[in-house]
Image (cartoon, rainbow, N blue to C red):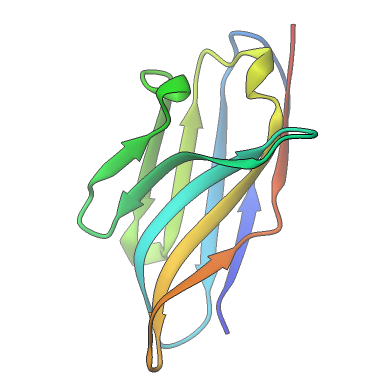
Length: 120
């Protein structure tokens, strides 16, 4: 079983910064891709950023130039550096990992979510 534990959410003023972390734990698994999604109240869960094991990244247009995803493969940890935060970035941020484990090649695992609130 693989678990994702997120940390780093909180309350910040507009223009401020936060750094989210997501640590994957378990045994005998390989992470193919890690990413961050967010869900604002009353809205669907949307992609924020992803990074493959090879380092390729993908960002939502709304966060390009402000957010940066990174990974420490040795620690099975992903980070999301969020700068120039806006009130519309307020949401619960979820970590996602696509892993290979046992006979399963691509299993999606989700964290419990961490709340980011940006005040105006």
